[in-house]
Amino acid sequence: MTTPARRALKGQQVRRELLPNQSPELLRALHLLTREGHLNADALRKLKQVNHLVGLLQPALEDVFARYEEPVLVDAGSGNAYLGFVLYELFFKPAGKGSVVSLEGRAELSARAAERAAALGFSRMAFQAAHIDSAAWPERVHVVTALHACDTATDDALVAAARANADHVAVVPCCQAEVAAQLKAHRAEVEGPVAELFSHPWHRREFGSHLTNVLRALALEACGYSVTVTELAGWEHSLKNELILGKKVRKDNPQARARLEGLLAATRARPKLVRVLFPGLGAAAP
Ligand SMILES: C[S@@+](CC[C@H](N)C(=O)[O-])C[C@H]1O[C@@H](n2cnc3c(N)ncnc32)[C@H](O)[C@@H]1O
Image 1 (cartoon, rainbow, N blue to C red):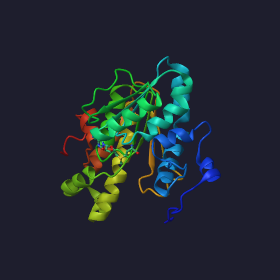
Image 2: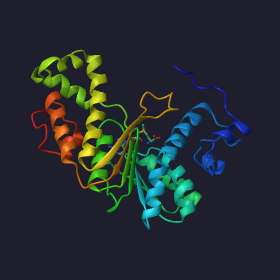
Image 3: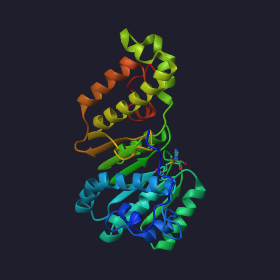
Image 4: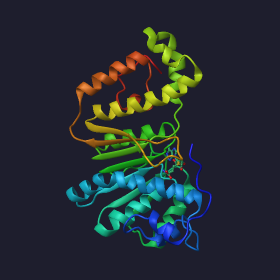
């Protein structure tokens, strides 16, 4: 395991971490840079994560800016809204159009981010203190992101994206416990040697987490998305570094839905995303 750098970066070292057109002023306003303009280890880790994801989101953003008058991006489980601020500065501000909506369950984080946006004059950023599954989502959403939204919050973001027919969706899932519990409850019903994959609690947690993301990718495909799953290289400090990217390419995909149904039947798993988007599939599990 790599040990995070302990020393603060200064001067030229800080500049090397910035993306083209990324301003130190924004990072200072977000308290990622200290007043002296230094980057401490935690802030550096966060900045690297966000900037790396921004690079991977660039094609999706260029696509929606080219095709729409007012592209809308929703960042679900936004925390301090670092991702939204960086995207706004690099894409939405220079384009002079479009908006970023940050959804966050913790009201104090949402309020602080809203104050920062007002101070920065980022007028097309909006903040909602709400749960992802009960928030007032904009009628039309073009890009949905969810970075480390805990457990089933990632499912909530994917459900909202699919329902809104979002053109692009990008999630980096966080911890997930739901499917591991289902594997435990229904292990006796699973036929053949497949049950060996999750007979031990540790394996159930690991396999449950893997299976959850496999089912998420398949469910997105079934909703008409082309899906890419990659490791977020450069995220060596995070154990949660799987990126699921979806691009809406057709109305739906019955073949993918059949594959999803097969996997649900074989494992007896039924994550929230499936229960909400496909209530008839995998009905045996809770
Ligand atoms: C690990 S933090 C990640 C924050 C941010 N996306 C980032 O990467 O810096 C997860 C955030 O999601 C929020 N969250 C978790 N479940 C949520 C839900 N159902 N609705 C809204 N926010 C949620 C938490 O309050 C927390 O701020």
